[in-house]
Every structure is written in structure tokens, then in C-alpha cells.
Amino acid sequence: MSIQIKPALRKYFIMGSQNCESNPSLILETAIKAGITIFQFREKGTSSLKADAKIKLGKQLREICREHAIPFIVNDDVELVDLLDADGIHVGQDDQSVKELRKYFPDKIIGLSVSTPEELANSPLELVDYIGAGPIFQTVTKTDAKSVVGLDWIRSLRAQFPSLPIVGIGGINTENAESVLKAGADGVSFISAITQAKNIEESVKQL
Image (tube, rainbow, N blue to C red; front, side, top):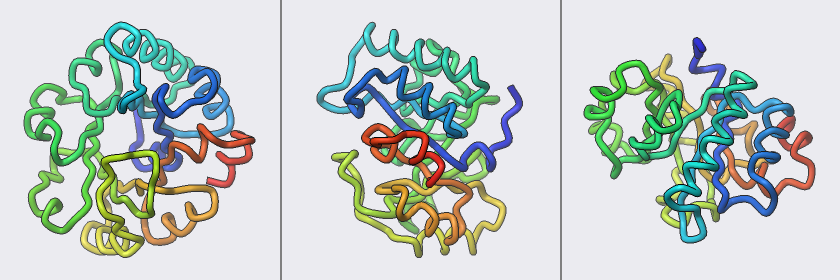
């Protein structure tokens, strides 16, 4: 599957079982049919699945993405990338270094979260395919989220790097997604805007 990064980032759905009150596979299937453009499997947190159960769910979600030609990204787990034959990996600043990852995965998509000018200065942008900029708004989904950086962070990044693929992360919902795109992001990422939506189809459209 040949993946165009910027269009793929437009509606970036992130999910693990810990985010779901109903079947994750059904949620993903519905979200794909409604129009998400990329999916990240993020099985993290106190109530998340471990070991074989995590791999089993990952394989189910991977297969759904493959059937619908949706890029499948793994959050911060090198082993899982191989086990699930993922299209790529997304990491934070405190995870495995991008330089090491690029050696392991010369042809995979690599995304990197960047929250501050200091992090930006220390990030080898030439080795990543896109950056996750944020948290743009307050988020309750991630307990370890950093301080909110706001829309100005997107504007600053876009001004410095006109062609860099950027997806906004953190607290993005149907009401504020448009403002993130107008600030210069190529796409928006979201968790609870879908996993807790009363109407997934309508929510994906509004995002």
C-alpha cells in the first residue's frame, strides 16, 4: 500500500480497548466506513490489555485496517510493529529514539510527538514522516499528557516548516477540529471524539 502522508493524517483515529465501552473492532469498522484516514493502535494505561490479549486485539484491528486500505500505526512498541506487520510507529520524546527506529524500519512510517521549541530543536525531523503537535487542548484521555500548547504551536510549526506533515493532538473534538486545521495542521487526531460518540458517523464527518 502506497501511503500519501498528508492526506492520511486528515482524520487520525487513535484507540485501544481501554478507551472503549463497546467492541473495539466494531468501533473501528464503523469509524473507517464513516471516513477516518489512518488508525493508531494505542493499548496503554491501567485497564489496557497485556501480552497475548493485546496481540490478539491488535491482529483483529490490523486486519480490519488492511481490508479497508487504512494505514495502521502502532504506538511506541517496536516489537508490536513486527508482530502486527504495522505500516508504522508513533513515538514520544521519551520513547525509543527516532534514529534507532529509522535503522530498524527504513521503510515504515515514523511519527514523533513534539510539544516545545526545545523538543523541536532536539528532534531529527529529517528522519520522521510526520509530527504530532500538541497537546493543543486539554485532554482527559491521556493521564500523562504534557502542558497545553494551544493553536499558536501549530501556527509556529507551520511557519517554520511549510511542507512538514503535521497532525494536531490533544483534546480535539467535533467543535474545535476546524480551528486546528485553520491554524495549519494537515489533520487532527482524536480518541474520545469517536470512542464516546453517540453517533460515530456524524462525529467523523464533523471532524
